[in-house]
Amino acid sequence: MNLRTLLVTMPSDARRAVLVQFLTALGYFSVIPFFVVYLVKVLGQSPAFAAGQLTLFLTGQYVASFAGAYLSHRTNPLLTMKVGLVLQIATYALFATGVSAAPALCALSLALGVSKAFFTPAAKAALVALTPGDNHYLLFSFRSTVNNLGVAVGSALGAALIDQTAFAFFLFAACIQVVALVVLRAVRAPATAPERIARPKPAFGKAVRAVVSMPLAVVLMIVTLCYQFHYIQLEYALPLVADSAWGTDAVAHVFWVNAAAVMALQIPLNTWLSQRLSVYFTLALGFACMLLAFWLLAESAGRPLFLIGVLLFTLGEITIDPAIDALLSKGLAVDLLPVGFGVLGLMGLLGAVAGNAVASRFVAAGDFTLFWYVNCALAALAVALVALYRKQDNPAFKEGLHGHHH
Image (cartoon, rainbow, N blue to C red; front, top):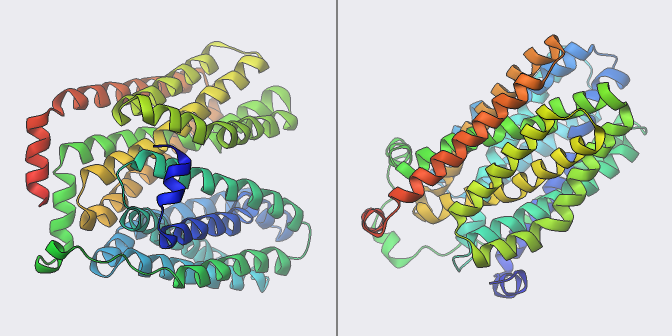
């Protein structure tokens, strides 16, 4: 299957869901990369306070991911997406009024994190439910590319708007999310399969236990934690190292190499891989790229090799993200997907928080070499886990899984 076939066979509701994904990324990333700049330069808050807001934002995501999964499980993912969007619109609207009191800023940062926790896992579950066919790897690659396009355009618009008034900056983000909400309202929930009507959904606690007792889900939870530990370095350690070694220009180059590689390679590379390799092999390959990237960063001091390291890091990012989502969506029954994505979201946040905390220790020491080797070890662990699980994943074991579904 190629991208054209995927797009032609995609129902209009699934296309609308993808458009909503693009719009929310556009609005969200017109604010998030500049949020710290806004707090420090416009509102005159301390850098420590600004860093604290990012922690609150992550906490909101971390605490609410189960609440979002619960709501999706009890009702449907489309409703959870709407709740997340309404919360985000309200938060931007309040920011647009020029709120500057510290407690209010803290509450809004937390609310922004909560809105993300409600929206993201529900959006993934909804997309799978709305799209027939079984090439989930290509589906999630397409979703990821659309999302990255929103990130790129949103960041560019945000950079232009940050110098305007706070009102214009946040109002733009709010308006984009209002458009997303209008499009989302036109999406109809997928029809329930006849055999599901007769069988009620399991209770939320039971659903969580069903997910975390599956060997595949456990492997994906650990792998997701490793991946987000790596990925957060794109926002933290990599820019810091580039800045201290070669100046601010180099920071722009990190993001430029990352964005250009994602936009140019994600769909062609993933289409090619999906036709030739199993998703497990693709996932292992992605972590092998990460391992090589961090080894290069540890061993080299030159700028060209550093940027090659960033490129390898990006190749890992392109393949790992959709592979994890695809394996989970193929391995779980549809009515367990919101819970499954919620659990993976939680593990990802744990990985990101841990990655940030560990990296900040090395910032204080001023030498990242050992830290890059820590990342190498985690990438190697992920490769080993995927390979071991793949060996276990024989036809008899799969039969047992499918017996458990129906």
